[in-house]
Length: 204
Image (tube, rainbow, N blue to C red; front, side):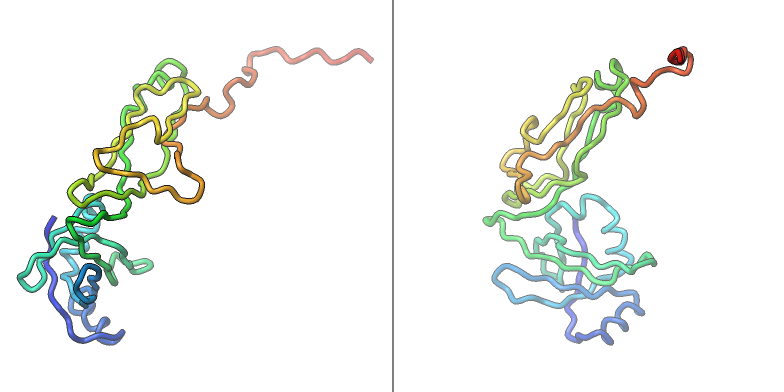
């Protein structure tokens, strides 16, 4: 995906407020062999781009003053209650260096799994995104997790799927094999039906 940026020389909170009033967004790009650079973006362009899932998990083509640079989104600051982007951080990408980033997880076929169709159970999903590391060329826009074979009471862990080529999961703490999906009976299942006769009271 491509977006346009321009350099900005004026910094500080007052300058940032003036930019935002003019429909611009202050931002920064850092990393690589170049020094961090203060940039500005068109608010409408970056707002719509940030609402696309792939913008957060793709190598982006930033056109900065007519020069193209590959970057990743690293942080976004939003207004607390208005649909306004306040600031964006980007990181330069080197094709020869692995990147560490989060990618969304797409869960498929839970509704046609044996757990749902045959056992009448409910399938719950795991994390909405995974932290991974890979070379930029191998960065997937998302990771698919097929829950179509999940049986009643079944569980699916990260070790049960194959990650895209060149992609490695980055664990946090001791969670090296996160749970991606599990099937459980609905709440209250197994309880006595309303038509079941009540037990006779004990004789005094």
